[in-house]
Image 1 (spheres, one colour):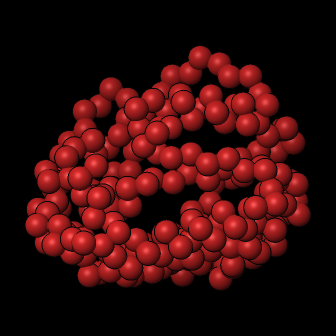
Image 2 (spheres, helix red, strand yellow):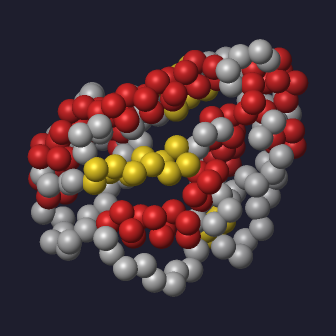
Length: 207
């Protein structure tokens, strides 16, 4: 995405998948896709069903969906990351509070720019679409709040079971970058609160 946004040449869709096919002969290969239309799909102007079918065509047979139920916290982390350019924090480092004023009418993700509420609706719709597109495949779902937030080993154990591989003792190399209360992060908390009042996403301010 960075190379394309800078106007640099990128391999075409089929070449990318050929490289993926030939990348590794190990039993398990993993590819992460940020599946919103404005994210990785925008690189090749590709639809999500076409992308899924392409993975299946070259031999991928299991899928994992990761969702953070609280879209507001997801968006806050995204906006903080845009301002700090800090998306990962190594274990042992102390998270630093970075307060922001969220521009709720103009948030950019990938190639897309929408209001906060419109992004919530897009994310919700696209997760529903993703589940429907994977209905005839083997897939498992994780919720960040339940499977990762308190102990990422919960998700790790479930992935190992899903892939029928043995789990091992593991060290967790990263910690959360923004483990702070929403009110402490959002300078314009009241504005966001007012925007979410009496709509289906209002609970996201309280959890």
